[in-house]
Image (tube, rainbow over all chains, first blue to last red; front, side):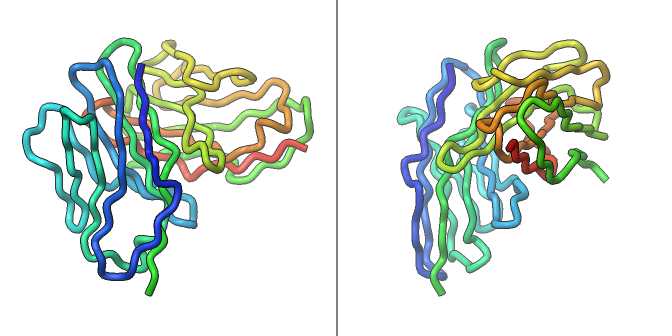
Length: 115
Length: 113
C-alpha cells in the first residue's frame, strides 16, 4: 500500500525567505518516484520536480529542490527566495512499479507568501 | 501541443441524472487516471487505467464508472449522481507512473443539487 502525508495544512512565509514543505511517504515498492505539484488559485496543476528512488543526488529545478531522505521516507520540497507568485497549494505525490501501485497524492499544503 | 482535454469545465446537475465527463489525451500515454479534489483531503484517486481495456479502482470508486476503449479516451461516468459527489474532478495521464510526470486536464467543477 502507498501513503503520502503532508502535515502542514497551511504556512505563511515572508517574501524572499526560503521555505520547506514537508512530505513523508510510505510504500512497499522497491522502485518508485516522488513528485511535487503546485496548484495556484486558478486551479491548474503544475508539475514542479521529480525524484527517483534510486537517484543519489537530490533533484533541483531552478528555485525548487527536493530534499530526499530515503531512510526516513521523507521528500521535502525546498523553495529558495520565495516570491509572491509562489502562493498556492502544493501537493506531494508518489507512484511505484508494482502491479498494485498507482500515483497517489497527499492532502496538500497551502503556502502564503507575505510581501 | 501535448495536452489533456477535459470537458465540461463546469457542470451543475440534479441528483440521479446520469452524466459523463470526457477526457482525451494526445500523447499516446498508457496511464490515465481520475481524481477528485475536496478541501482538506487533497486529490483522491477514483479510477485508473494502465492501458486499453485495463482499469482498476482507486481509493474512492463508489458511484463512478470508467471505460478505456481507446488509448486516448478515458471518460468518467456518474450513473446516478448524489450531492456528496459535488467536487472538483481532474483527469490526468502519464507515459509512466514512476518516472514521468502527470499531465492534467483543466478540471471539472461538478455540483450535484
